[in-house]
Amino acid sequence: MKTGAIIQARMTSTRLPGKVMKELPFGSGIRVLEQVIRRLRKTRTIEEIIVATTINKEDDELVAISEKEGLTSLEVGT
Image 1 (cartoon, one colour):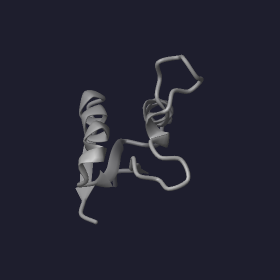
Image 2 (tube, one colour):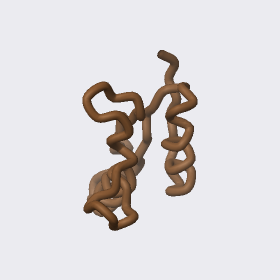
Image 3 (cartoon, helix red, strand yellow):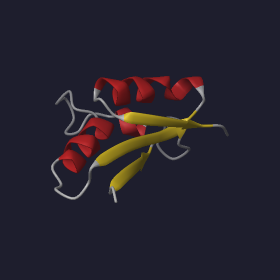
Image 4 (cartoon, one colour):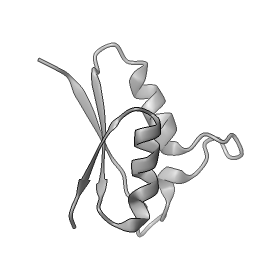
C-alpha cells in the first residue's frame, strides 16, 4: 500500500488571497506551497504528494509549481 499526502491549495481565499504564493520567510524567494512540499519530501513515510486545486485560471500558477516540483496536480471543478 502506498502512503500519500494531498495538499489543498487555491489562490482565491477570502481571508488572505494568494496565501500559498506568499514568501516564507519574507524575502526568501521560497513560497508557502514550495515549503510545504519540501517538508513533506523529508518525511520517510510519504511516497506520493498531490497538489489539489481548482480549474480556475487563478490557480494555474499552482499547477505550474506542482509540475516544476515533479508532483501530480489534481484540478477539480468548482
